[in-house]
Length: 400
Image 1 (cartoon, rainbow, N blue to C red):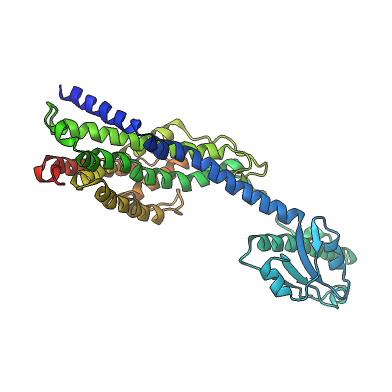
Image 2 (cartoon, rainbow, N blue to C red):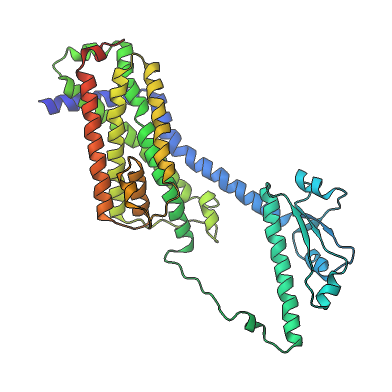
C-alpha cells in the first residue's frame, strides 16, 4: 500500500514539474543545445584564427643587407610584408603580428660559419602573434638545416650523422580518439558532478519551499499518504529530474564531439572526431555513479527546501551548494587517471571525479570503485535521514 502511495506521489510530482515549461527548457533543452553551440563556436573561432594567420601572416622584416634568409622567408606563401616606423607599437596594436630584424652581416657570418643573432619582436599576449612566431621559427629552422646540410657537404660528411637516433611514435590510442578521451576525462566528471548538484535544485525548491509558499503542502498532509510516502515520492521525482538534466548536458557534450570542425576536432589532423570506444561496463558504472551522486544532493536539497520559509529563501540556501561542489571537482581536475592517490577516493565528490577519470581511461580499479560507491551510499543514507528529520518536524513543515 505504501509503495502504491509513493508511486502516486512520484507521478504527481513529476507531472507537476513537467507542466512547467520553463523547467523543461532550463533543465533539459538548454543543456542539450548549449554545448553543441558553444563548442561549435569555439571550434570555428579557433579554425578562423588559424586560417587567418596561415593565409594572412603580416610581418615586418628589417633586412638592410638583403640576406639570403630574408629572401627565403619572402619566398614563402601566405606572408604579407608591411612597413613600420614604430615596430613595438605596431606589434602591440596588432597592425603587424611580429617583426624580424636580420643583421647586415648575416650572410657574411653564415659564410664564415659564425653564429648570427636574429631578433624577433612579438606580442606574447596575442594568440595570432604567438602562432605567427611559431611559423616564422619553423621557416628559420628549415633555413638553418639547409645551411648545415651545405656545410656538411663541403666536408663530405653525410647529414644523417647529426641524427643518430630516429624516433618513431606509436600511441596506445588513435591520435584523435586519444585527444577526445583526454577532453572527455576533463569535461565529463566536471559536468556530471555540477549537474548532479545543480540539476535537482529547481525541482527541490519547487516541491519543498514552493509547496509551502503556495499552501499546497498542508492538504497533502491531511490525506492517507504518510509523511514518508510523501518524502519518498518527492525524493524520487527530484532525483529523476536531476538525472534528466545531467543526461541532457552529457548528451550535449557527446553531440559536440561528433561535430566536424568543432573544438574537439582540433586534436585530429583530419578535422573530424571518431566515435569514442568506451566499454559498456564503463558506461554502466558511470551511470551508477551519476544516479548515486544525484540521489545524495536530491535528498539534501529537499531537506533544505523543506526547512526554508519561502521559495526565495530556499534559493538562497541552495545556490551555494554548487559553489561548494566545485572545490573538490577542480582540486582533482588535472589529475592523471593512471596515477591518482588513494586518499582522493575518500574525499566527497572528488572520489566520483577520480573514478570517472579512470573509467574513461579504461581503468577498472575494484578498490577505488567500491570505496567511492560505499562512501556515496553512506552520503545518501545521511541525506535521506536528514530529509526525514526535517519532514517529521511540525515546526519545520509549518515554518512560514
